[in-house]
Length: 116
Image (cartoon, rainbow, N blue to C red; front, side):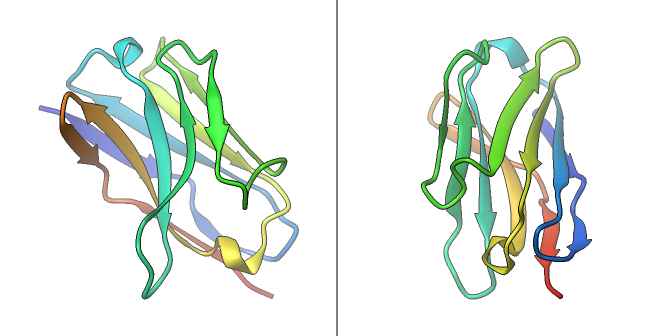
């Protein structure tokens, strides 16, 4: 049974930093690529960043390039998202996605609010 738990969100001011974590279990972590998505109120869920199974390849949405950094630690089945220079438009619920075969598995999300 795939389990995904995101954490690390919060309320911060513009320009601040946050580090999100995604702790997983129930599958072979080092065999799958992973992604972060986010969803703002009233909008569709959107891709933020992705990382290959070994961590050697990453990609980012244009809106977060140069500010966010995705990483993973295969020894502890955890993925991270370091978010720097946060902007109000980064506000939303951030989700970890684990795609296994044709199935997308999601956590419950962690709320990030950027406001002054």
